Length: 192
Image 1 (cartoon, one colour):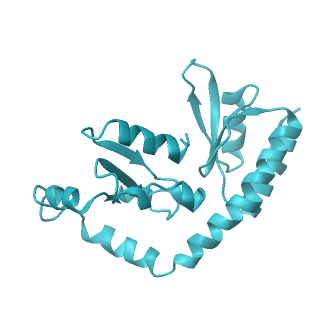
Image 2 (image 1 turned 90 degrees about the vertical axis):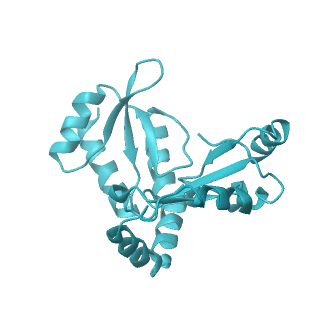
């Protein structure tokens, strides 16, 4: 759930003696000016976490990083272990970082083509969904468990989840434009 940067700054300024952790695991999908990265010098109580799991496509490694004021990072480094990151993770991240344009192109395609196309489809069909600033959309399809099974049988994986009210929806990851077209085409066959 995106929170306005001004609101995050206001909270951090109001509680200067509290550590404020801001999760930016989907920051690549958001406007650059929404990041708290450039506020860290004036807000030493803020910690920003980011990950290689989402946009960079290496979730099983559970590898990310922390941004904060220099004195916070020094303090954390003094208590961390000597081998926090395994060698396979290092190799995977180096490989991903050696071709960042692939990720930048994917994010642009996602933000300008794929996600808007899926949102237009949902709007056209009258399917309720949560607005998203990430690489997925939470949707309330009729008969979500039945639809999930039919999609899985066609090689499309979505994740059934209950919202805070216990209503089941489907968490649909948005891929490339071609993958989104395939998803929409499949849904057209399956939905009334």
